[in-house]
Image (cartoon, rainbow, N blue to C red; front, top):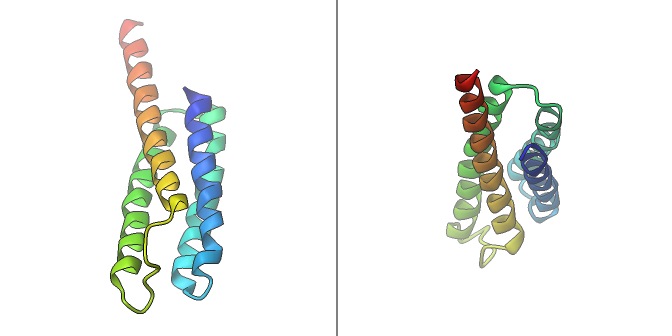
Length: 120
């Protein structure tokens, strides 16, 4: 599960970086996707190295916030008649799905570790 979570957050990071060219004329959105993509790529390390519960909780919180912010950015662009792109691109949907998958897998890891600690 650790490698699965690392894969999901890493791929979500790569997909965030791939969204940057779509928003190059809108610097705020481009910066958001750059920062969030880099953060998610970094988060592969705590998952593979199994840094512990605090790191997993921070990852869950950060990814949950990114899901909301990414969704907000996509919806705000669609509803803005000046910047509207005419539809949600598949890349954005895939990014959201990988972020949600990361949150679910990491939550399962936390529950599994908690259960193991209770048995000890």
